[in-house]
Image 1 (spheres, rainbow, N blue to C red):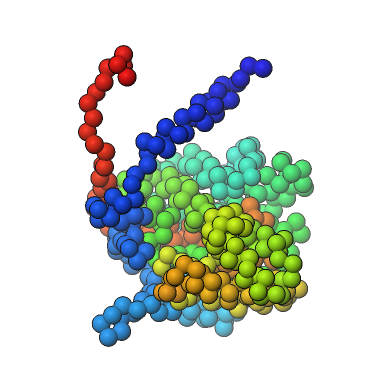
Image 2 (cartoon, one colour):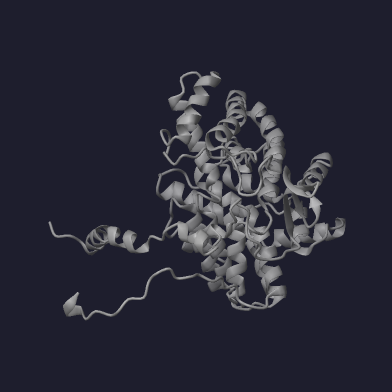
Length: 454
């Protein structure tokens, strides 16, 4: 049977992979020889300082007697401790997504009238162009919701007469619109896939202008539009905790880089989405859920800590799950002793587990949370400390909320679009030069050889 063009292309690529790998490989010792920070990190794994920001700050170390030592992680939004912000929302029994979004965008907490106007502005913006759902989202449904989300964002540029206008007021308008419609783009994309690819029922609910972002997301997702107060508040907390993280994360750095080139808002956000979808960034919570599912298949007694510890050791030894040598949800590029987002999240997740009858599942996560850092520290000889990060519990939370895995990373994007918007605006305000890092060639010079002599 004759090969198709696509088959020939795949065959050509397979045959040339070895050549590609041989000529593309760089001796890792050269990074140290030339003082190049791999991944823009120093030898201790800390990020190389690449910019300044007013938006958020991560604190993982402190000075003690002139020495830098690890401390419990702290996260600040516009100078406010994240603990104070979420505790205030919980104490006053309010949804906080919109208020914290205002803070990140404009730099100050809103008063009541400013918050009401901002909420109304977002509510008024929760509309998509006529037939957009039918003609764009439903046209080519994909299991990859992040690709679907990116396609929708880029297509929205076609409906914007000022898509290329990078004036501050116009970019702010675009950002507010995207913050408002991201839940719709994500959930509608999932429902389209679920209907056309899985042959399930199709639900396209309209948002309710009187509801918060978290409530609307659950309303759009659920066939009956119903949800409990605790469900909505836990999701609201998740959105707040994922909204922004220090500016140095991969997708936010991408936002700065692409903004510095003078590109439009839709292209910038699509680039950030492409970064976030990677399993080393926004896709990590899915890996936690998959890892825990594998643990439950491999471990006979889920209350036997010795058996669980043996499985975790197999993970590190590349003998279980995806054989990558990782215990997903453990450790962070910045935090060592603790990730404040994980500590905040844990208490709310425990309450949700009790409401959902998932106490045994939460107990299993708690055992892994306790054992994994000890095993990693011992086997990897990491003495700075290892702790669970926010991804460890977010996947479990979304599962208990009935959110399908396909939407785990898009929901991260629903939150992080706020941080991306704040950083895009900050880059526009302070932009001077295009961000252009240097790369050093380590290949020797070669003389040209005529084709007949090769």
